[in-house]
Image 1 (cartoon, one colour):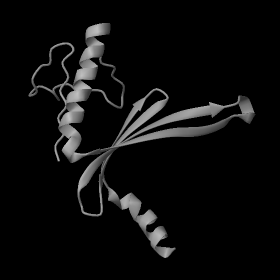
Image 2 (cartoon, rainbow, N blue to C red):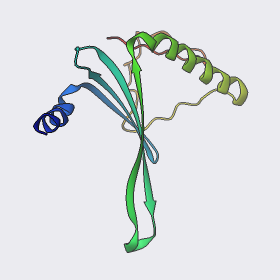
Image 3 (cartoon, rainbow, N blue to C red):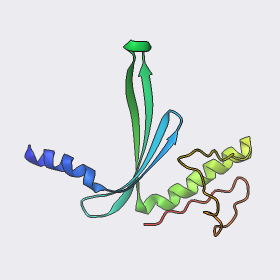
Amino acid sequence: MEDKKKSAADGDKEIVFSKAIKAGKRIYYLDVKKNRKDEMFLAITESKKIVLGEGDDSQVSFEKHKIFLYKEDFEKFMNGLQQAIRFIADEQGPIEPHYSEDNAIQEGENENQEALSPGEIKIDIDF
């Protein structure tokens, strides 16, 4: 029993990088984790706030869905994601960027990056 408690406590230590993306009632977490062999993988979690009831009787819970993406699948996943987003842009028009205080692009931050044409998506993940 002690081993289970120890491994659960060590679970927090396996996250080596984390990025939270707030999007309305949802938060997407991108967590880079290490397995027991010290190999890194990406855990993508969608967390959605659920409110049941109204007023003083309301109860708040969170619905979570996880995807584990392994290094050997990154390229295929990125290609598929780009195709899906490109399809949506072709069918419904270019995707307009939405900026908030959390993800605002600072002036001059992207001066050295190539300009993307409308509907073009660039995903760059380094490990």
